[in-house]
Image (cartoon, rainbow, N blue to C red; front, side, top):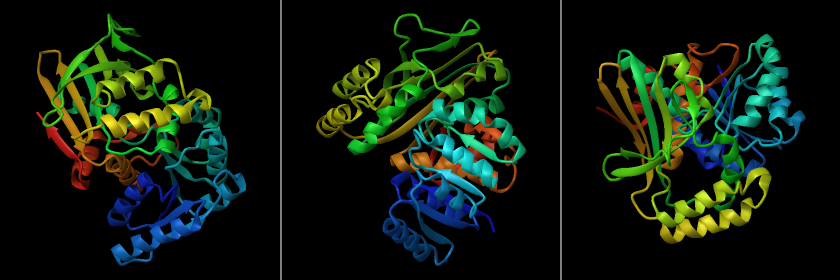
Length: 364
C-alpha cells in the first residue's frame, strides 16, 4: 500500500488535502509536524470520520535533516504543505537519499527551482518525481491554458485572471505570503510580439468573473509557470492578471508593500502583515472566495471562457493538489524528474476530477 506523508499536515491547507485523500485513495497517510498532539488529534479525526486506521501522526522537527530522512524512509511521496524557505535543500537532499517523490504546494518557486536544478541529476538517477508549483495559484493558470488547447483548434491568445476575497487571514500567514511574494511574481509582463515585455500603460484588462464578483479591473504579472507556454503552444499573446482583493484601501496598501519589496528576505514582513490584517478586518466584505478565469481565442476567432470557483480558500488549494496526486498514484505522471504541476498533469482529467471533488467549473 502506498504511503503518503503530509508535511504540515495539521495546518489548514494540509487538513483540507488530507480529508480528500482518505476518501479518494486507498493508502496510508502520515500527518507530520512539530506538534505531536495536534498531529495526533487530526489523525484520530480522519480515522474516526472514515472508519479506518490508515492515518497516523508523526512528531518531527522538519528543520532537522536527520528527521526528514527518518520520515521519508516511511513514505513513497511527501506533500510539502509547510513553508520551507531556508531549508529547501535539506528536503530535496533527504528525498533523493531515500528515493522519495515530492509534491510541493509552497509559494517559493525561485529557491525550489534553484535547488531542484542543482540536484536534477541525482533526482533522475534515484527515480524521484518532484512536482513543484502545485495548487490553485501557482498551479492552475498553466493547466487552464493547456486545457484550452484541447478545446480550441489553433489557439493563439490566452489570458488568465484571478480574483481573491478573504474573510480571514492570520498575521503569520500574511507575513509568510509577503516574504515569498517577490519570488512568486516575475514582475509586470505580458507575452506579445514574440517576447515577454512590459505592457503599454498599466496593461489593465477588464474580466467578468460572473456573479457575484462581476466585472473587475485586472492588472498583469508574470508567474514562472507561464514563461514556457507561448513556445509550447505557439501562442501570439498570453497574460496572467490579478483583480486584487476587492477593496481600494486593501489593494493600495498591498501594491505599496509589493512595489517597495517589503517582506523580501523577511524585511518588514510582520509589521506589514499587521497593517494588512487591519485592512482586511475593516474593509474586507463579501462575497468571499476565489475565482480563476481563462479567456482564450483561436486563430479563426472561436472563443472559450472558463471559470473555476470555490468559496473556501483552503479547499480551492487542496482540490487541484489532490487531483494531481491521483494522477501520480495511478502512475500516469509518475516519472523521474522535476516538473511544475501545470506542465505535467493531463488537463482534461484534472478538470473532471476537480469538479468531482467540489470545485465549481463553468465553461462557455
